[in-house]
Image 1 (tube, rainbow, N blue to C red):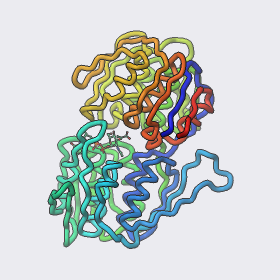
Image 2 (tube, protein in one colour):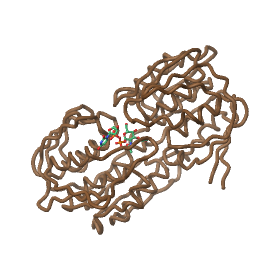
Image 3 (cartoon, rainbow, N blue to C red):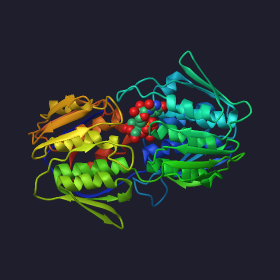
Image 4 (cartoon, rainbow, N blue to C red):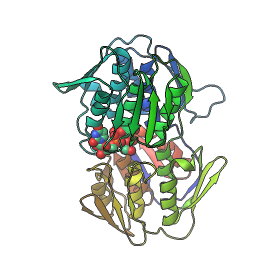
Length: 429
Ligand code: EPZ
């Protein structure tokens, strides 16, 4: 298993190209199940989760063609996927695949909408909490699907097709909103989704579905209206830039000091996080080429934050921000309101010298801590990258184990950081 070695203490200087968003690319790939025509996606990041989803879609009969680098492309240019679900050969998504990547549960919406049935394994818990799928099921039931849960599988049936309906989510759910959108696109009649997730990835998927012929309005707000259509066609769509990758590198620069241009980063996708970073002492400037983040001289100020659905502070940046707060000049509090168990990084940060107290959903971080390198273990994607950020400011060498978690969601992390002066390298095997 690969490890990553980091020797801390170097400020970051230069430019980092931002990749396409993992959390948009995955549902966009799943949307290919809705049509027999070809869906072409540009700017798809090179990630382990994207490769795994290709295999999962293959299993349903989707033909996936990959156009890698073309002459003139840089090493960071995203890949182009051609996905063609002309014939769906299997409407079952087995446990072995769904348990490896939770988002693959989302195939349930398009499969039942187009094929009238789907049998998808319950994903089970994961490192960041229990993560139920009851709201996906409720959404499909509101569109007329009959649901049965048997032997660890959710079986959804709609022999005569889905019907438009009212879906009022009791809680904001990104995945539930994707399921509702995709299923409602092929339902008969109009669907209204209330308390919909406003995340930019939802708006990106809706944008692509509209290019495929769907009739969706209001995506990006909490009320989305979908007028069902009998069928969707192919389209070409470019995945939006990854706001979590952008925020992660912005935090890394705030941590180490220096001056970096996050190429292609779009401030409106992470304004709350950028405001919080500015309060912590980073200088942030929007430019035509992306977002410039700098921190020179002055130390890091403590800032209290609570995670919230978009446009709030994203849960996917909570661990990284906690790493930064270990070096702040004072005490800060971070409250996690989205997932109940997303503090797996706390014990590993403590191994590097952080002082963090947990009390229910709130972590109190006493800064500034002198961080020193140590062997640490990655537990999930965002937790792992928080260890990398802490290691960039630690004295001596940190070895991050189980980096396959990082590879699920960060494209060439070590290359991007080392190009800006970090001492970071991957040790294979
Ligand atoms: C998406 O997960 C993202 N994943 C997550 O990114 C992200 O952390 C999360 O949204 C919140 O922003 C992808 O886009 C692939 P939710 P999702 O449904 O859709 C509860 C990363 O590191 N809930 O918005 O699964 C749930 O338990 C990741 O890239 C139910 O109760 O999250 C949580 O408390 C990890 N019942 C809350 O809602 C349901 O049926 C929000 O979850 C569904 C969710």
